[in-house]
Image (cartoon, rainbow over all chains, first blue to last red; front, top):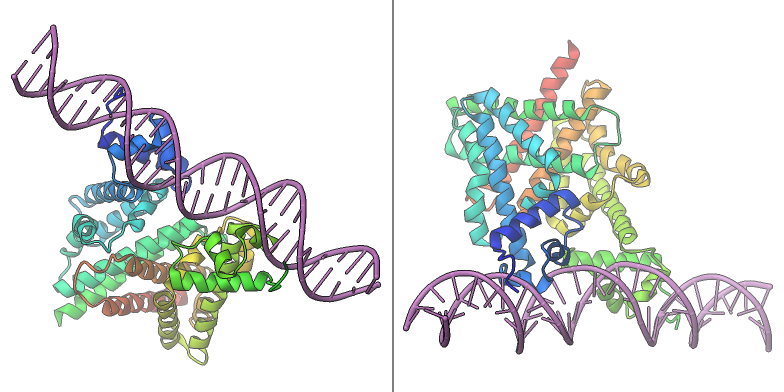
Length: 193
Length: 193
DNA sequence: ATAATAAAACTAACATCGTTAGTTTTACTT
DNA sequence: AAGTAAAACTAACGATGTTAGTTTTATTAT
């Protein structure tokens, strides 16, 4: 019975809520259907399959991440902007770990995903880098380095890899960001030659 | 029939080989059993469950990674050692991506895993850092930063996040390592004050 | 108001998966 | 030769993603 009249957006929203509260690991289509008071098979009227649903959630996650990042760097420049950007990134990863995980599971191999999500993921850091006197190629490299540091830190902390020693994790994070700023300034000097 | 007389090590070895050739994603106990010419239920005579098998494979991966790292830094010091270490790390991640992925899925929350694997994962970089004049706390932070950079870079490249632009990935990687060395030298100066 | 259509739900089923219980067979030890 | 423990088996359970085909509902057009 077409009682509720659910649509694609409802499904995706419910899936996101479920993943955030129960964890990506325990997510299932049957449980999702159950929460929407429909049968699992009915989901397929709205989504192609589970992969497509994950992809959609990944797009959402990226747009959310972009949003907080752009908000953080507004009216800031250079080192201050870098710190604000990374802080926003770090906070997002810590506060919404399950949704964050979906981003990396996005099959970037597919061209459509690269084009739809690629730009959004790169734009904030590229904006910050444009405040530095760097070549386009330098910016590309540095953008990759930035994302590596941030993602590496977040995912290792989330995985529990930093729990072995009782040294303050927040301070390690600050040092990582400081290292990136050092590299930035160093690259700027190189570019001016 | 106790025909082949398989043991725990055989199971683990076969699982590793299967994951490396077919991918972690498509791994299953039933397929593993099939390749060993036994039934899936028979696997449970040797392993407790799938999680335990993954844990075991994670230990193997960490020990392999440690091996190539220690080999790489032998008789090297400071910047040269850092580069050799990261190169070994990077090559391992690129050449054995499926096995590498298992490391991060290790449930570090459990205390036994932390103690058994934690030290092995940290030892090589700590050895290299001991060649710098740093406090113990600095070393702890820098070790985390190093692992973040390396893991972040490897996993993003593997996920396809670096394919969007045609800028040389290897050069981005070199810049990341150079950035870490910069931070190292900078930290050393700070420590001497 | 009624008929047609498309959307949204359903039932039923399949293959696959991890896992458990209980049983049989093999190989080694005594 | 008998006993024992390891290593395999069969059979089944519950859960998962997914497909095919069917029924119901809501909206639109006549």
